[in-house]
Amino acid sequence: MKSLNYWILMLLMATSCFTLVSCGDDDDEQGNGTTKKCHVDADGRNIDFGYAYFSIDEPSHSGGLYDYTLEFTNYDYLSILKNPASIVGKKISSFYIGFTSPNKYDINSLPEGEFPYSRYSSNKKESYYECEIGINGTINSDGDESCEQYYETDWNSGYESGNLIINKTSEGLYKIEIRNLNLLAAEPGDFDIHESKRKTTGSFYFEGRFEDVSSYDFDFN
Image (cartoon, rainbow, N blue to C red):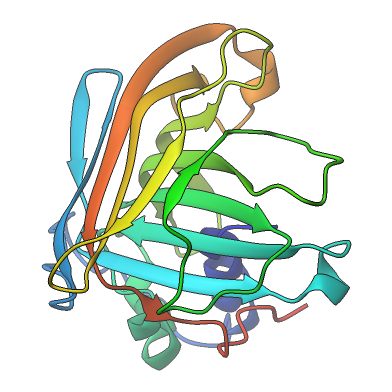
């Protein structure tokens, strides 16, 4: 399963006939009013997010399991559909949770409880998650992309992250936490985790509602 950042790149490439111009500095978007509080702490650095997106892949696309994407960003992804050039030169940070389950949920019925980290699982009766973090990723007018700092959850035995905790508040908002993230850090500017041996830690917190983007086709291949 690919994060929405991948589909953004595909969208930009598919609309390359547009005249692309720089959109200025790295002012963060303020959010769409559905995110009450959201941030990730990684490597001693705190990043706030104003947007939360939900999508689902049906089992026919994911080996008999439902794959859910929960992605938190500082940029309005849907605005890119209206103006693809708006992404050029922007510094976009995101926190991605890939949640896999044998059960079908929707934007209003995510399960409450604690769910373990797993990079791969052959047990189709259990739910599990994995994470990616990208800080200050950019796409240039020529389509080249870079990322100031990229992380993935550490898949090495003995370094698994803590559980993904999902609850609902009395206001009907989702509260999602990962209190102990064990991460692998890519070299600055790179996406290649496999060449990196640097380990670090972090945590994640979200309180708010999601916007469902399951019906949007970000795949232009």
